[in-house]
Image (cartoon, rainbow, N blue to C red):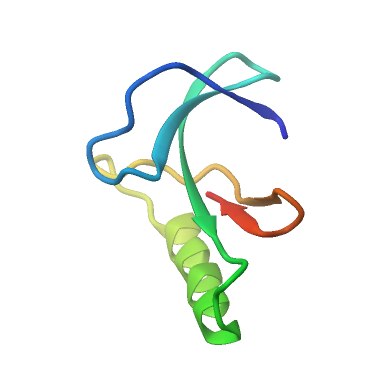
Length: 79
């Protein structure tokens, strides 16, 4: 994984959001982890659609999408 979880409090919007430091540049980012291991195919597709929407949104009051990847043996989607 290219990030290191920092000992910072969770972001207020959701308990599964964390602040992380990307090892490659030392910058702080928000990271949302979604456990997809028990999701139906439809639910996983909905999560992928959420990524597509986030990637297309450009607005000064919305956090920009950087990347998404699978972690923990492809059971966790990191956005």
